[in-house]
Each structure stands twice: as C-alpha cells, then as structure tokens.
Image (cartoon, rainbow, N blue to C red; front, side, top):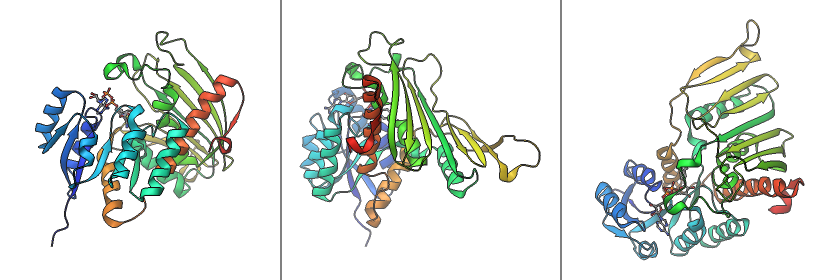
Length: 337
Ligand SMILES: NC(=O)c1ccc[n+]([C@@H]2O[C@H](COP(=O)([O-])OP(=O)(O)OC[C@H]3O[C@@H](n4cnc5c(N)ncnc54)[C@H](O)[C@@H]3O)[C@@H](O)[C@H]2O)c1
C-alpha cells in the first residue's frame, strides 16, 4: 500500500513561494493549506498550488489533522511563536532563517523541539548552493590540507528590500543577524563552532535605517581556525556571498552566484600556484534541495543535520558580533549558549 503523503501548510507566501514549489516537486508531500495576511496574495498562491485551505491566521492551519508539516516563512519576528505553536499542535516544522532575532526565543524553540519530539529543520539555504557544497566536499577530502583561515561576505543592497510593511527596517533586526546569518552559518558549516568573536560596525550607508548597515566579525573557532565575516546591506554592488577557504595545501574561492568555483591545490600543481575552475550549477536559493533533505529525514526517521541547535548557534554567533561591535569587547560563545 502506498504511504500517505505528508500534508503541508505554509505561512508567509513570498519567500514561502519557494517552499510551496519545493513541496510541490516532492513526491511525499501534498500542499493542503496556505496562510498570509495579504488576502490578494493568498488567493493567488491558493490557485497556483491548488491548496484546499487559505487562511489569514496561521492558527487555523494547526487544527487541521491532515497537515503534518508547517513551513514558517513569515517575517523573523513570528518564527518563534509560529514554530512553537505548530510543534505543540503535533506538526513538524521547517523554519526560515534566521531562527529568531533573540537568544531567549532561540532557546525556547530548542526547548519546544525537545519537549514535543517533532522534526525541526532551520532553513540555512547556503548549505545547498552547489558551489558551497562542492567547496565543503573538497575541504573534507583534504584537497586544501588543514584549514587555517575562512572568510565569507554577505553583501546585499537592502535599499529595495525593506520587506512588506518595512518589517526589515526595525531596531530589533540587526542585518548581521537577519542577513549575516547566511555567511556566519556557512563558515560554521565549513569550520565548526565559533569560540570567540570580536567585531566592529558602522552606519554610513542606510542612514535612515535604525541599525548598523556594516559589520566585520573576527572569529576564533574551537578548531583553532580563524575566520572573518563581512556583512554590508548598504553596499552599492550586485549581491554576493564571496567566500574564501585557506588551507595548508591550497585555497578555494567560491560564491553562490557563479558557474564555477576556483581551486588552487598543492596536490595538483605542476608549475607555480594557479587556480583551476570547477564548474557548478548556479542555485543560490536551492530551497527544493533543502526541503527534499528534510522530507527524507521525516520519511526515514533519521536525524536532521541542520537542526535547531545549528540554528541556535548561528544566531548566537550573529548576536555576539552585534554585541562585540556595541561594547568594544570580545564575546565568548560559551557565555551566550
Ligand atoms: N533563505 C533565504 O535566502 C531567504 C530569502 C528571503 C527571505 N528569507 C526569510 O523568509 C522570511 C520572509 O521573508 P520575505 O522576504 O518573504 O518577506 P516579505 O516582506 O517579502 O514577505 C513577507 C510575507 O509574510 C506575510 N506576513 C506578514 N506577517 C504575517 C503573519 N503574521 N502571518 C502570515 N503571513 C504574514 C506578508 O503579508 C508577506 O506576504 C523571513 O524570515 C526572511 O528572513 C529567507
């Protein structure tokens, strides 16, 4: 007998559109409900994905027995409330990054995962960008020897990305948490947990926003690797997440918007140091791959890799950058977690 499909409800239908497309292509899922406070958008998405239910209050999805999984793709402020309520109602949850904007809420979500035993995945989509996936594989295979320095930049001009109702323009939403979590999580994924952070920030580009628009965070990792994250949301340039991984026997330069990554490895050198291009697909927002992995975990009862603890540690590292830039002092992660 064919296994019953997982009924899905999606909250927040702009970024949530990628979630809906991801569930629609997964053979184990069926979209049952959509939720957005914008009635016109709600009607469009309901038609597009043939959803039986369209609601403006997410709680109306939680009482539907056929829905087993809730995707939270609403503005960051709602992630904790909606994720916790969904798990308490017996649903598995896929939650957009950043997990939350505060450590208190991040820990509350982690406690709800433990209490309810539901599957939970945090959507750190850079872990699925083909260029970064290949770079990680080469690092793990030893192609560049032992890592000693990693860096990533999140340069994204937010002038046209204030969010519906300007929700991104808010003193609670430091860009280094909301957007910078992509670069921070990427480095954590490659180099492991961060031990200590020292940071600087300024506010010279988006002067009408209530938050610093530029931050530099310097890290020591538990492994002894050193790292640097740069976050600029007032930059005037095309979006990039250019990242460089330095090892004792080579260097990788990569991003999530190019059709190749650059690798220079002592192991393959015949002459002097040179970069070789390795082709990759461009898929900077590979939400389909993320969702497929989460559904596999649910179907096969295997643990989620990008779990709530990864989300908590990434948010904590971003908060450490903001705190260090504010106080001028280094922040140890073990003092936050
Ligand atoms: N993974 C990524 O690369 C990526 C990219 C963009 C956004 N995001 C994340 O996705 C989330 C949504 O961002 P966005 O770009 O779609 O924002 P957006 O402002 O474009 O859209 C937000 C949508 O949520 C709806 N909404 C607001 N409050 C709601 C509520 N209480 N209940 C239901 N719907 C509500 C709005 O009507 C709107 O349609 C954020 O957490 C953001 O950080 C992630």
